[in-house]
Image 1 (spheres, one colour):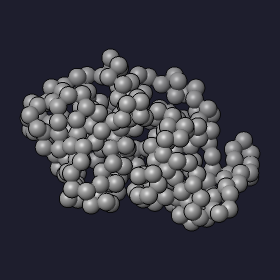
Image 2: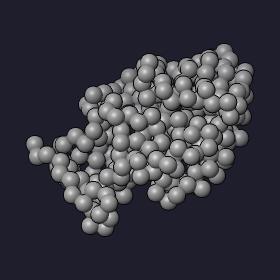
Image 3: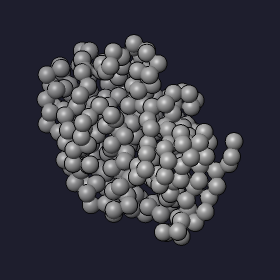
Image 4: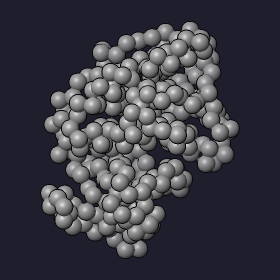
Length: 267
């Protein structure tokens, strides 16, 4: 297999363009993340299950690898070239100062979107492998566990008590996403049932994009959760620089997944 090559971009010599032959791996799940990528040519695949299950195919103009900037600095999936591809590599340190100065509210939204993308990848993996039921768990010291730890330590977030399915539905309809801290919710999608406990998330990307959630859910008993306002998060994102705003939009769109006909206000 031919190796990946790097050369300065003709349009921006401060950045590099990577030439990635079909079948080559750009990064693997669990790797440290230090760059974001934008596809210039070709098609890249995003894989989980040690690179064996394809969960997304990305084409020209799409960004990926956002964890390097707004996540926990670890890759949550593996990226391989489906076709011969070229990608623009953007080092995370070019955007680091803006991230470091972000408000606690904005950082909490980044962490929660990291959780939602992990959860979305898990659900897609279940559907692709015809798994009827499984529990979404966060392994100790994993990117998701680190994101949850940061959220639970963020005093700017509101705690909510969810007493029944009607209360949960009302929360989501009023443009808020929640991160479960205690309790259990089942979501059903394409014949698969996912059990969410501590660290499970509902409705955040949808609230930010201002699109309805299409997940069928059932609360088992009651739950405690952290609430994140979608309008406030969207307004905070809107103040970011164009480069970072594009990275965040890519993260939100991927957390939404393919089940929505529109990306709403983050299109």
